[in-house]
Image (cartoon, rainbow, N blue to C red):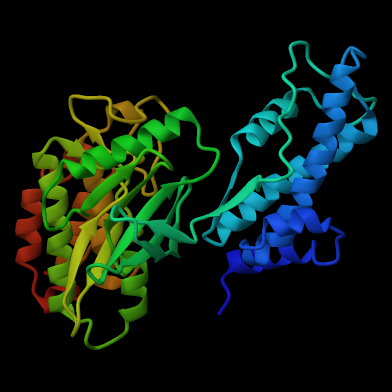
Length: 393
């Protein structure tokens, strides 16, 4: 079944099916599969406008780029942007040659849609290349350290990154790769690298393990998990085999992971149903894995965003500034995650049961009345019995 991203890409590519393209450009993209025609068309149109831009700049007409050509180049720039987005949503990517990327980035600043555009002084002529591809597909496969290749398949998408999986042919092991999206700014790149460094420093069964960072494309490899907590519980919530014992085991693994972070003086700051992953094993066993440490912060350090603006999925209403985040603010989100694990609801379970008392104490509106440490939550959950989920004292 096609994903929404795959349908979007398919619709975008369909626009180019009947568009005339010079065979010389099509030949450059013989190995580009379904994107060959769009790559060739965009490349040909870019070269046409770049040639004219070079000519106008050489003729010394104070670098006046005609109105029609300005509009044509702006249209191509918009189409290149849409190409990036469509491929990204389908779990694929494209790389533009450095020279063409340089010119398009600079042109956005001075191109005007009407009346022509004054070419800036000091304009560096475009090195137009009609004999090498300007567009190159990425994320179809990954090259491993031993130079073997493995096919990539998209498995997830966040605000800043795409996640693919691949099977290492040397060990027959499935591995995940998280890659920062195209167009990320310097702050996002720094945050992404710090996320990896934080996770790399942690060695614990319930923390997602990361392996290798690639500076070349801002990506890193990590252990593959089959599902998010959100999807895992939703799929099994009404099934008899997903019983109290399994839910309790899941809750305790989650709490062990959070407790380990707090012992290491690290606050996650974005605990949620999607940032808790499930690694599944044959015949039913599973392991909880805390992931997505992009907002994580050491208690005595400013590792990531720390200003007044508050980020995260389950936001503590008592938190006034993100820089003031403390372990007790993580505990607010813990209540919601526990409620979801045991009952499959994002709303907090009623306060009348033993489970409800734990959940509501975690997420109390007054931080001073919450559990002040995860160990006490662990002790309370360990005491839970099946009948205590539906009966009050």
